[in-house]
Image (tube, rainbow, N blue to C red; front, side, top):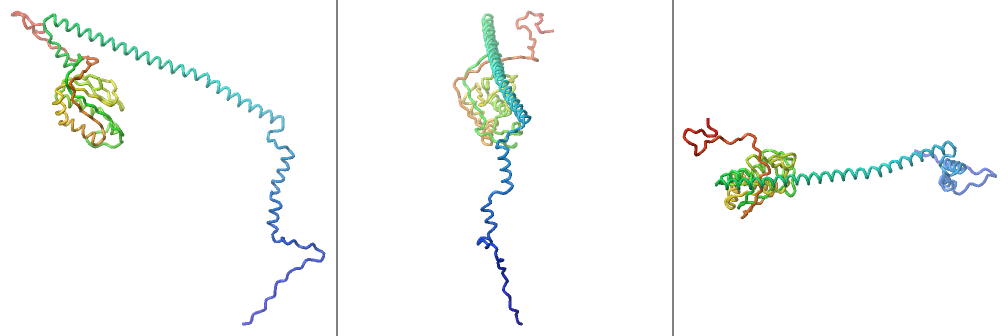
Length: 314
């Protein structure tokens, strides 16, 4: 198959008398970019701005007046706010100081009343002892000791229960039957109830928790995350003092179910506890003893004449 010879492309020659073409004619785009780097629109805008001036503030009288009014209003608002802050700061400080002074005054008044109560209680106890000595008997000492109405001292044990160092949040389980607190590393009111009841069962004759003397009417409850003993909030660590035969009381409690329960709390939740035997412990009297339902039973006089009726007889 024969092939047709190809004709070379024809090149147009410059017209006679025309200016010779520049050597960089094929690079006209790059030449324009190099020589005219600024767009025409930008150049025109710059020229207009130069004619009108470089300031961007309004030139008309109305515009300048509006700007001035706005600046004045802003200055007034800032000044008024600063003045109010300066005026209210001393007032708030005075209110806080008044509240703090009131709290301190009420605390001092409460301490004074408590001191008066303690003084009156001591006076009443002294009068009772004097009256018993005059009558030749001292039979009321034992009921007062058992009721927690008088301070006591003697040998016993010192048991300290404290929250875990790093209390962890977990679900119910372990030795606890319920999860009253979300933080399982906290000591609960139920735990303290078991500790105190275990000491009573092991032979303790008098018990106090963080200085709060327990009686037959005492209650250990929870209010939020706080433990209350006779409606008085206590803070950890909880120090339990129990008077009794120290060595026997310590051994009996650690072998009891309540002592094992306390060890399980330490193993499962990190609750810390320690028990030690003490030679002499001193427990204060209960702060208040109010009997609402009990009344002394009527008894017959021991040396009544034949046919005479006792005070409570019918």
